[in-house]
Image (cartoon, rainbow, N blue to C red; front, side, top):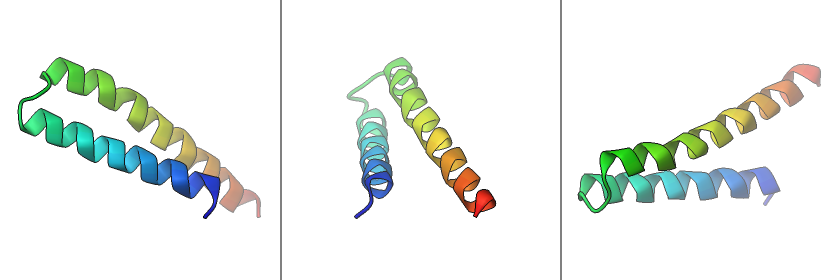
Length: 57
């Protein structure tokens, strides 16, 4: 399995776990946002990197 696939899987699982913790009110909304921002930025950069590879090939 390529490294980007592993990273995307890890980010997705982390996002789901963070969402579950927030919906069960274990963590506060502020902590949810602070945890979700880095995950979403990482997915954005991975997506832009993949798009660049597709457009150049």
